[in-house]
Amino acid sequence: MNYNMDDLISDSKELFDKLTVKANGAVNMSKAYIEKAQLRVKLRDKYYALGKTCYEMHRDGTDTTGNMKMLIKEIKMLEAQLEYAEEASGKPKVCKFCGAKNSGENSYCAKCGEKLS
Ligand SMILES: [Zn+2]
Image (cartoon, rainbow, N blue to C red; front, side, top):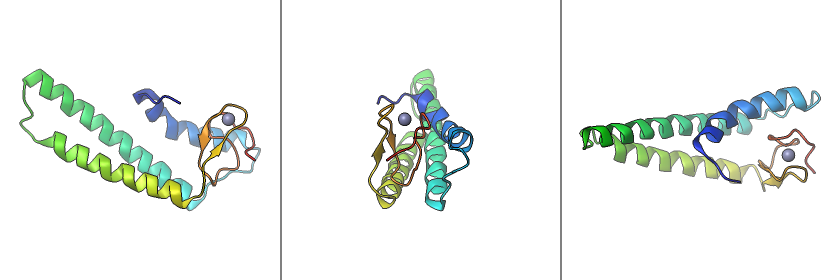
């Protein structure tokens, strides 16, 4: 699945919406799940800040703030944390219905709401 910036931004929100509405009351909201959602939100913010810095650099011709390097470092750290959290929650489950890759602890597909086996 290809990820673009918009997907990334809507993902966490969509996950919450779909899990709450579609899972017929069987809502899966473990602590690990929430932690991962929070990490994704943090990542999204960093990606946003990186994009903004990048824009300003090109606009002004230089990165006077030195933010770029710092942001990339922070993003790398967050990505590593998220990867670790994903691994800790078990093997990813692939939805048979839509093909989306779901976290191992999910009972229902975060994308389409189908039950995961
Ligand atoms: Zn699905």
